[in-house]
Image 1: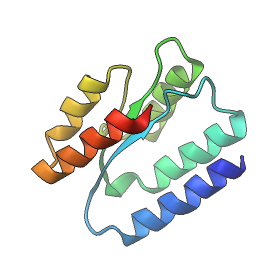
Image 2 (image 1 turned 90 degrees about the vertical axis):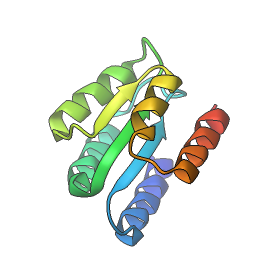
Image 3 (image 1 turned 30 degrees about the horizontal axis):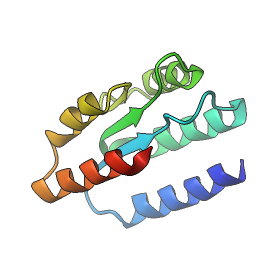
Image 4 (image 1 turned 45 degrees about the horizontal axis):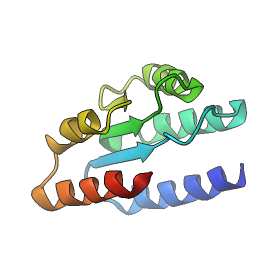
Length: 115
């Protein structure tokens, strides 16, 4: 839970500091399940930053509970700019549509080093 608190603080600062819309990629492939309290807090975060997020791809492992949790959360927060992906290339292709060339390079570096 302490790790999530740190994540929440950093994410809030990033949202506050960023001008304009945000495109993100969240790697949850090493997670099997979100504890209920973390699920609720993350859902609250996603609802709160909803207007600023242009796209956010959530990378998840196939057959994990977190995949189902994130699909439910995304449905509940009602933002078509958020999707779950099990395949890196699919997430990359979806995000690259709205990224500049330098941003695409940063995305590739993140995805390639995330695991």
